[in-house]
Length: 228
Ligand code: 5RP
Image 1 (cartoon, helix red, strand yellow):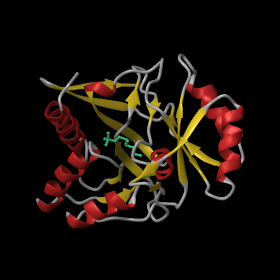
Image 2 (tube, helix red, strand yellow):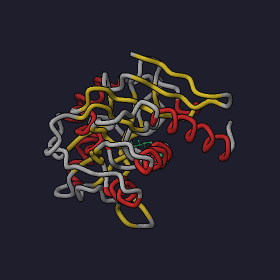
Image 3 (tube, rainbow, N blue to C red):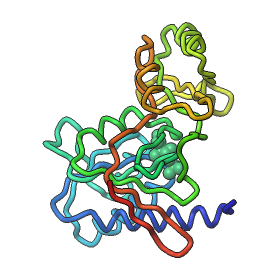
Image 4 (tube, helix red, strand yellow):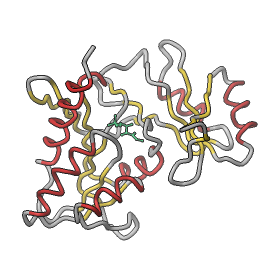
């Protein structure tokens, strides 16, 4: 088990490595979370030194951080394409499939990812795992009729827990709720995704399959890069 400093060290290594993939003239996607934070900080330094890019943000938090560093932002529908997207993940397997949404930005992150030519994920070494998936699967549901939606999720033998923050229901940037779902041992991620998305009221799941092209893993002695 790694301590907090080791985890931060690995996140920083992975984040800064990803920034090396950013080149002049690119439109980049910026994910959300504490690992992407390090990539954004590095990109901010690069912009200060003259790097010319524009960025599509996946959350209010990322937009705020990017603005504070003078990283030029563009709306997703104003960008013709996104050359490179940098995002974190909560759990990843060796085939570069995984679970995202621990920070609640999964919907925008998925939309940004699908518009991106190349997707880089950055993680600390503790995030490598996969089947059986351990991280509770975040599922975004609309508030309207959420108790019925949660019941229907339960009827499918999933165990959803409505996400709360500081005693209040957590709201995504779209004003939706998140149900964190414990998965049975060995449950197949793709089948789970399909089953959940058939339920009316479910907006999106944190299942990210066939999206990441490059995985950068921070380790105690540097970074390891896996490619699809
Ligand atoms: C947010 C996400 C994040 O990418 C994921 O939760 C990883 O975050 P962190 O780098 O803070 O561990 O999917 O919705």
